[in-house]
Image (cartoon, rainbow over all chains, first blue to last red):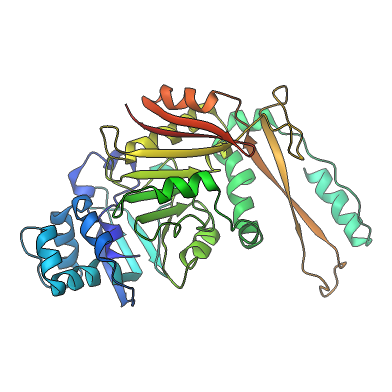
Length: 127
Length: 259
């Protein structure tokens, strides 16, 4: 699963949705791979308004990436600076969590990630 | 069910192929425990038939393909019940998070357009793992008709609506099987029972070690067939707004937004 996905994922437990501690989920024992994916500048620039930058910064730090700038890049900055675009593409699109766990900071439930696929099915007592 | 299974295995042990009796839908069992009923008659079936099912589902339906193609570049959305992932790569300029209840189908979807190209997770449509109000769109094709009570079907629509952005910009596209399908081979019409078991027949591999060459396994999938107007009623019941709706090749569909 891509790092971009983590920006939209939260705990599947309904009672956790209202808690700010449930987002973002925290990667644990994550094994990462870098895939080679063609850069789509228009897609990347346009989806920036949907990104929660503060959550992305948390995720990037937890996975051992260099700290992100405090503010998200503007469309103009991304269009003017190809390296910025490539760095973002690398983080959001090319980096995948292959194995590990995603942990909810509210209830502590751990979701397994295997072969790049997270499993969010809940045990019956959490549904 | 057990009586039929026994008869079928006796027949197949004797090398005889005989038409199987279609089992009746047990409404009491469904009403008593909808979740375990769906586990047996939906989730377990798709897990077993995943690769055969996938091989028969490769062509995107035009209404859904044009909904996806019309999205602005950079849109982010969900495909809840993505099956084999046939809609995940229709528009390469949008980002779609696919999910399905069947781990076997999700694995197929992940590699739909190249190794690990599609974003997928295993999740239940009534307990989705996405932050609320965060995406531009959601599609849910041939999924909600597998939920066995109206409360659960409405909850599913409400969950989809809750996942898209507020203010009418977030769009949800839902497709369900219609009761009124006079021209299909199933032959249902407005007078038919809306709750049905629909067989999926899978032929075992030819030339098994000791089995007969043409052994078949029949799986029974539960469907709730929607009558005209029912899907729109469910959208309104959970506080949604109907943007557009229609009938397309034996299915009812709706595009809805948050009111």
